[in-house]
Length: 183
Ligand code: HEM
Image 1 (cartoon, helix red, strand yellow):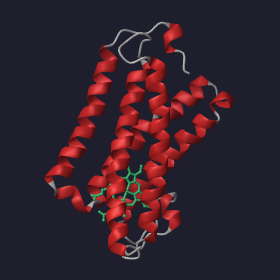
Image 2: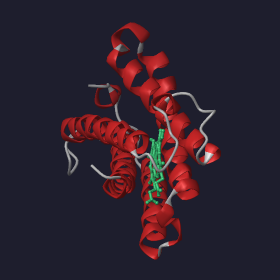
Image 3: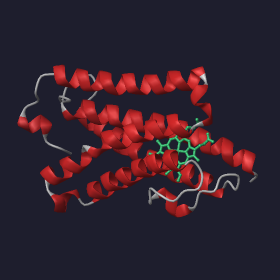
């Protein structure tokens, strides 16, 4: 695969990844105070939230792999987890790396949730907001397409959707203990 193709794939996976992360965060926010029997049953939104996060992980791997494979930019595989030392766009890459580290922390703690207990798991899970915000900031700082109208519409829509979900949740009635119980 040539560098032009890798560059295209890197940029497109970056945008789709941000969209999937945004949808995952929105579903997560709405599910916390979702009520069984509302228009979308809680078990459906939770399953969607989980499956979208797995899809996002696959996209993140593809996004990083294309950045590392593209020889036009000097990015090594360890820059995916170590947020310093990249020769290419060090700040932009570091912000993406921090987002990736937080995504890994959220995924790993979810896999061992039974051992962590609900409180510990929830505290780490809140970092998903920061991961999403850092991912968005990374795209704005490093992306070739940041100046394009369609890209700015995409970034603004992502912010608007997460903000709307947070507002909607804060206005929603508190669920009963049984409804709030995590799946
Ligand atoms: C959750 C983590 C991440 C998200 C949500 C994300 C998302 C994005 C987005 C939206 C863009 C903008 C694409 C464009 O403007 O065309 C982008 C660009 C880029 N990302 Fe990421 N990214 C993440 C992590 C990483 C990591 C860890 C690396 C490298 C180790 C990386 C490398 C790059 C590079 C090199 C570009 C620039 C592509 C260009 O030339 O426009 N990203 N990313």
